Image 1 (tube, rainbow, N blue to C red):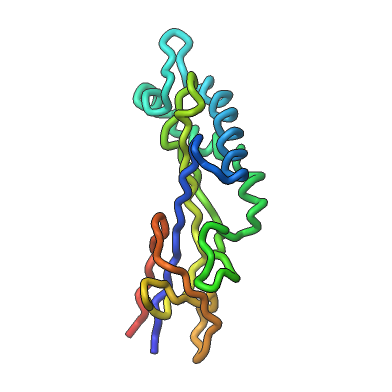
Image 2 (cartoon, rainbow, N blue to C red):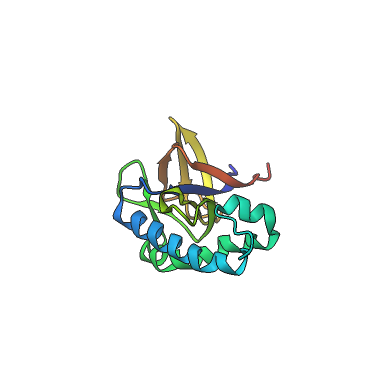
Length: 169
């Protein structure tokens, strides 16, 4: 029996209403970083206050996603490769991640409460064994063997398959 390989992605949205302390730190530090970095892309004569307006007037402001994301790096490393918002069905293990991408949803240099970012975490490639009762049954062992240690992650908002490699049948 052959099984497909997948990669899961989990998107975490952080704004001023985020109640978890870790998210609050990411919120505050990415806003401060944005305030500093946007100066290089904004015009002194005709300043753009929101990120979306700044992007409209200066295509190079696209780099602000990456530059602002640098402030989140120390916090991301604290997670030690686990997305704690996505526990397995037993609550003993968490969805692992190997990389992430931060994007600015929007922000306003005049009002920190308008700051909103998204962080998308990407799992390693895992073997998709089956979909059972609204759960992804996966194994981190992607080699062809007859038995696997499995993890079961429930379907949930902001969790999706972002890579699919069909098994050769």
